[in-house]
Image 1 (tube, one colour):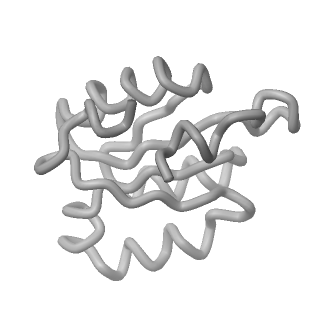
Image 2: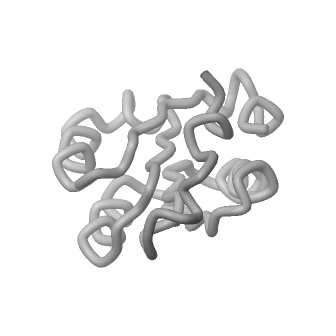
Length: 104
């Protein structure tokens, strides 16, 4: 199931209708633009898992999209972000292989 299909109707739920995208470097901005275009939800980018943990403590998100390559490179931090997801739906993508078009 594509992310867009999972996010349909979220804009009527509550004020946590944001997506947190965890992806390093410029790939993150490209993927964030694709997510926003597809879901119309505000998409925030965290370049590191440590930054993502801080953001997830400060705000709630509908979904957290995690670049799989980053999670594999930092498994301990990857587990820590999963503990702070709350009710957010985790989605793993590989932007290096699939590219932003896969998020549409």
